[in-house]
Amino acid sequence: MTRFTRWVTALLAATALAACSGGTGDGDGDGPGTGPAARITVVLFGDAEEVAGYRDLVEAFEAANPDVSVDLSPVATQDELMARLTTSFAGGNPPDVFLLNFRRYGQFAAEAAIEPAQSYLDTSDVLDEADFSPAALDAFRFDGNELTCLPQNLSSLVVYYNKDMFEAAGIPLPRDGWDWDEFRAAAQALTGDGSYGLGTEVMIIRLAPFIWSNGGDVVDDPDHPSTLTLTGDPATRAAVDWFLDLQLVHGVVPPDIEEQSETSQARFLRGTLGMYLDSRVAVPVLRGIDGFEWDVAPLPVAPGGEPASILHSDAYCMSADLPDHTSAWRFIEFATDVTGQEILADSGRTVPSRLDVATSDLFLEPTEPPASSHVFLDAEPHLRTTPRTGTWSRVEREANALLEEVFYGRVEREEGLRRLEEDLRPLFTLDGGGGRP
Image 1 (cartoon, helix red, strand yellow):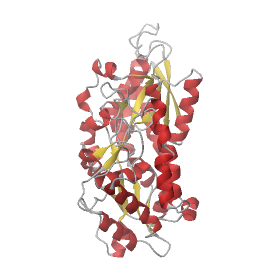
Image 2: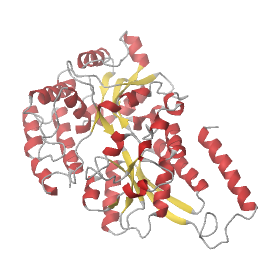
Image 3: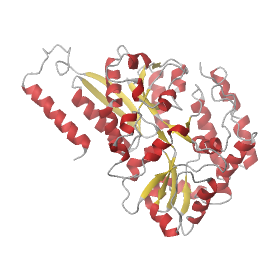
């Protein structure tokens, strides 16, 4: 029986006992269990394994709050989530609560569609700002000051690796402080006989940490960006070329046609991929592996550079135009208090944004892999973020599509990098110059 199951079983028993004894309310709906339940809708994204953790969270919340009923409405991907939210806001029927990545909430915050969370947190008897990672909180301060949404996780980009493949090839296991040359050498040694050394989605957020590690940047001004800057600065260009060369020169990443037929995650699950770049989100799926041992390691560091990774953080946001935010905020309080954070941490899904849960044995000493969960916490001092502007999600979406064309050789390198800067530059001005308010 898991910790979550034991907790809910005890709580349900206590709730049932209270009901049998007549409860404490008079049936007028003014207290827990006394009247018709309030209903809230919670929209979020995730695959089946992730959603299972959220269903556990909702079940525990409803057990503790019998006067509130939650309609959990998951979608499979962040793109589907954005489409759902855009449609629901346009139709005047937004969800009460929605879970959104820091790179994507800007377009809703810029339109004042999100009820700011700061005043609710300030007056909460359950939560305190000091409970949470400052890095996660800061990512959701759209105006640079007031908290817009409350973060539920503090993940980072890491290297998942197949320990059995490393040992069979006689390669040292990844270590803290390893550099690009060691990383590439390992990927080359693991490539062959139908296997590949590295798998990754081709996205700006996969490229950015290597640029930062080498002393460069992705945009001209993180707070008020007006263009991508992938070619002009020598440090940035060197990192871009190093990343592209993994596919175009060294061939350690599956080629286009193979990636289209089987994703990197599926290949890693099958045991034919040595390393895989992803955030903590991959853990629930990877815990289904039983044919080999795997673990996580930090990203490699540029020679002579600094450690760097990118924040992967989602937050609970409330729609602004609700007649009453009480039930929505109660759900967020529960989800980000110790019990709620422990439930998702136990599922493997999150690096808790609450530091007390993140540093607990539940997260750092789990009974299931990864054994080196401390890697996610060790990365916190080196986490950086992409811009949180109103149009960044669109910039990123179009940049990813073109970067993938270059990575797989469908567009010539110089032409593709030129287009990444020139063709996307107008998108930065759509929200009044690209900056936050």
